[in-house]
Length: 246
Length: 94
Length: 207
Ligand SMILES: Cc1cc2nc3c(=O)[nH]c(=O)nc-3n(C[C@H](O)[C@H](O)[C@H](O)COP(=O)(O)OP(=O)(O)OC[C@H]3O[C@@H](n4cnc5c(N)ncnc54)[C@H](O)[C@@H]3O)c2cc1C
Ligand SMILES: [Zn+2]
Image (tube, rainbow over all chains, first blue to last red; front, side, top):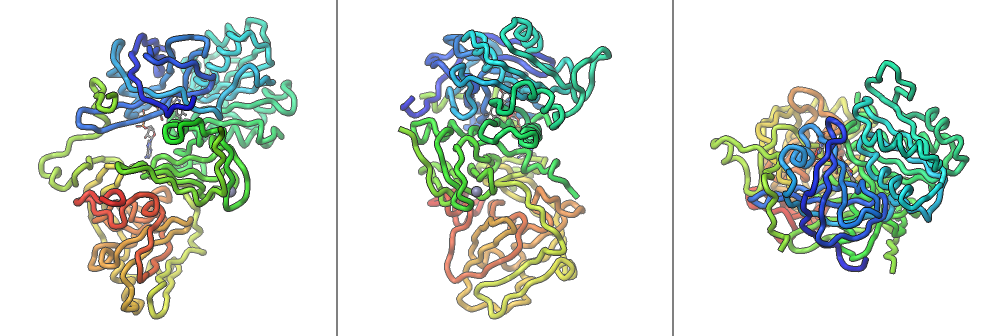
């Protein structure tokens, strides 16, 4: 890509509810370009008087899904852009976007593994793109996902993740629910800490390739935890989403 | 007394990757995997790994090793200001 | 083309102000009720027993106060409107602090002093013409809305210069340096205006 990044008008083709607070928007792009799993789009809203708001959203879909991109967006209380998308935007509306963007927080099958993915809340979105790409590319790289959410109903993509974990390709998923747990819960029920990371990362050896994404303070905690259990800094990549959800 | 955990300023911190769009639009190239060196402590990092503060009049990128300001970016109606005096170099890939 | 595209149904989080208040909102600004935190770095943690405030530069003799001494200086209450260059304004903010006039009574200014740079604990700087901080137009605050100023908002003390855009109101301020020449600060050297009057919309260099 050598042209400066251009804005284009995407059309909302479909909206699907993932959890009570999270929706996936499928966007049709006039100039679709194949992305790399982990990349994001910038999205810009403009009011009639010229007031603008711009935010970044990770691509949820696999690069193999052509012609469209899916963005999975959590509604933040009082959030300017996320509440607009949840409450006002409907199928057929047009939204300005530019992308795909970024090269730092990217995983491709060719990078290998073993792969340790750590997500908090909507931070699972770019990790999901990596997992979808891994499946589409037929990769069998040993992979573990540790996903933190407030409650069982807040686990985004749970059914798809459970299905991927059952397909025998070497992918395992671990959940931790920090606020409330179902009565028969067998997963973790606390914030991510070094002990949890040691247990989940253990079987992947000393130098897994790690991607951490979610609210800034969760990413900080997980990155510090990985350092504590001896994962080298050059194997850890982070994507901080900001204060939302913490 | 507030603790580090409830530091709003730290909670708003992002990665250099979060401003990848602005840099790509400016340089016409993906910049987050470009190498840059902190002028204060001498550590090298990828642009995407810098600490990014965007809830501000401009974008401030800091060194993840020592937190010194490396790069400031301000977009004005008449031009874009790039203050990189905190970076010993930025390598733009070709 | 796409440049002028308007998003259907988008107005933003901005609130409309009442007619009497509208006159107090400078051009290009909108009123907010909360107090947004603007952030160019992590909050510095300043130990009060090591804290001091200094006036230096083009003065006959520089002066410093430690925390206890600073609290003994005559304080005043200020109720002012503040305007952030990122386009929000907040009306009737209540502060307690020491007027810059009071601080300057403790030094003898060099007649060449014409500008001031406020500097802070973690290296931020901002510059202003000297008259802009005189005659009750600027103060160094340690209470906001009746409570000690939160670290995220610049505590233990921040400069407040309400008639200029709020980036001039340096958080975590630890001193004023009097200068004979104007010297651009942290944002001023990166495209922001050296003066920054919100009523004249002096946002950027050249405005
Ligand atoms: C690279 C990247 C990828 C992302 N991908 C996704 C994704 O896939 N899905 C997703 O849901 N989100 C994603 N995000 C987060 C997203 O960009 C927005 O930050 C999020 O949607 C909130 O935006 P908003 O306009 O709704 O809320 P805002 O109006 O921006 O507010 C968000 C929250 O932050 C607080 N806040 C904001 N500004 C301030 C301030 N100045 N002072 C104090 N508090 C403040 C608000 O109170 C609120 O709680 C991503 C972020 C980045 C950087
Ligand atoms: Zn450094």
